[in-house]
Amino acid sequence: MARYLLIIVSLNGDATGITVRVDETAATKEPATTVPNFRGEGTRKIRARLIHPKLPTPTYVEDVAKLERRIFGEFDDNKLHLYTFLPIRHDQDARDIALQDATRRLKERAMRLLTKEREWCADKQRDLDTEKEVIDNLLNKLND
Amino acid sequence: MARYPITIVLLQGDTHGVDFTIEDILARQTKNKTGSVRLTHRKLPFPVATKDIALIEANTYGGFGGDMLQISAFIFDPKDDAAKAAAIDEAKVRLREHAVRILDFEQTVYEREQQVLDARKRTIANIRRDLKV
Image (tube, rainbow over all chains, first blue to last red; front, top):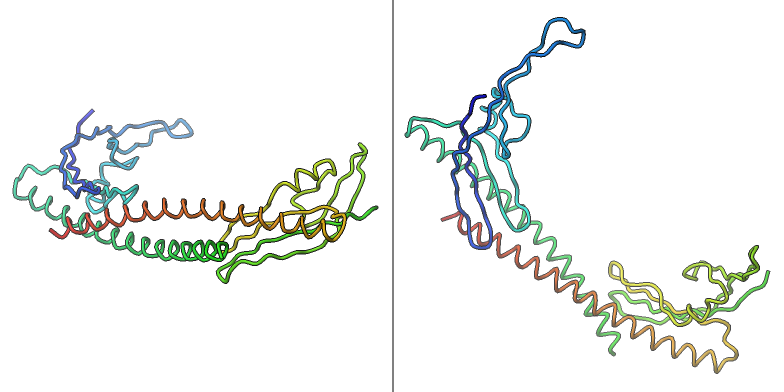
């Protein structure tokens, strides 16, 4: 069983601010296996998979390139948590460039999510203002 | 099949204000297989056994939904006009008190939701500021 190294770049946001975190986390690479087909004749091959709690499952090794372009996570419960995956690069320059690019993409996504959140807050505030107006109005009339 | 007179006192509130509506209705009185007598009418909260009338009379029904407060009280078979007028006045007081309790609760819910929303706005502003740095 081989190990496949991934770099996870994550943004953790809460009321105290935001941090960019880089973890080098090993994902387990399950080797490709072969099993008999449904007639018991011959075999079919099951592709090698990567297993890691942060990875969407199942993730096949050939999908790693796709993973690099994807961003996972969302704004939830007053926290913003986004992450992406980068195959480890031993060339320091290539690694720095990849990290900068991933961080930039994560921040852009975060801004888009926050814009949506602000729109949601504005809608919610309008609803609450109306509710407050109705309650105040009725209380005033009842106390007249 | 007998008819049973009921007076409904209804407190209706919307953004325009609050109004009391007084309505005389007749409920259908039926006897079921066990011999117990029930009253049914669409304005009654549910088919009422006549033995439960005192309970119904002591309560108010309805609540706050959307921008409308609508609660009602039922007065069964007022004996005469004076007794009916007194019962209506008493029901109005109870409905007003009930309405204030409901609105106080709604106010508490509103304040809690506003606090949650304010916290969320602060979080968003913090994160946006830090992202721009």
